[in-house]
Length: 231
Image (spheres, rainbow, N blue to C red):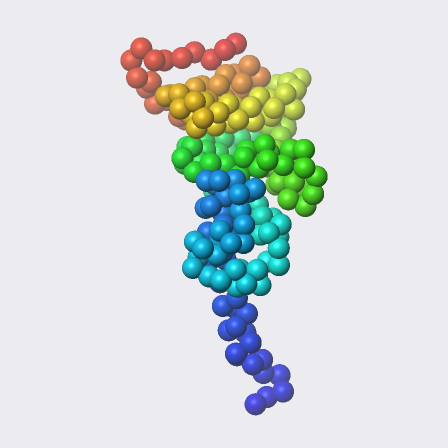
């Protein structure tokens, strides 16, 4: 065997280990969406993956590391579904609208499964530590992306230069929080539609005459339900 050859067996073992870890994280993420990050335990994950506790522990070393891995996986999937697809839209309002539309699609599925960002915030808001740090980092990255899209909308002349970009970002984020509360907790019908109208109202208050039209606005609204933007 060549001195430069890499043994195949260790490589296969490492690949299998990564695959097993991915299966564990996927199961832990599904469980955390239902019962929260605090509800995660090595034993609970071992039970649903049909593995031994020692087998799960060998991949993470602690419950805290398992929780952090779940946060990171959730963030990676969030970026893949919400952020990265929106980058194909033109800079400015089209990209901001695409980000919100993708966000709404994901939120509509999380009404049944739960959002790690929101449940994690209530569980770890006053509990310093690595899990809270991972949650704060993930949410901050997303909020920075939304703020950047708003600033780009101003630089493209789609939103007024004197609009408070942080206020706009705050109100948009508030819509998602209100949507989860009304749709998941209170189970109020039509919450998703109201969140969409709220987003359009926020943009309408700061839009310039040169702002590109929203293609979705060309679709006729059901009779008797057409809403006008707040000015």
